[in-house]
Length: 149
Image (cartoon, rainbow, N blue to C red):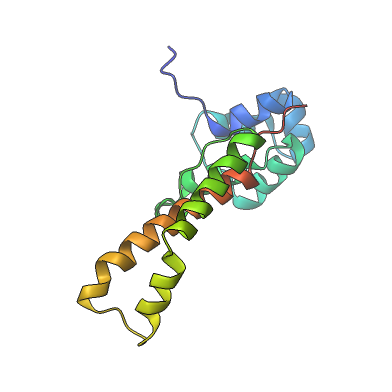
């Protein structure tokens, strides 16, 4: 039954062009371990995922693994999608331009001037943080672009 869900470890392996057997060999794992990761029976250790990233040529897997494996990472690392270079660059530069055109750096300096955030400043401060989160998200998208050969 296809529920539309693709396991991140399986997707990375397939994108790299590896069978489970070859992946297991290159990763120094048993085929059973690879199968367990790919059916979500177990979560691989970070060190194993780092090897997968290297062997499969799949840097985006690192972000996916972190977000999938811990609630803390999901609360800190924004959800990003893999895209091509031009879309990632345009998205990042648009976010940075918008931030600058709104003079957000000036407002942030004003808020920080007295070393505290008062009730009148809180709304602007929170809005600025949201905009910075979008810049971080766009930066991560650029870092993990899809590189088609």
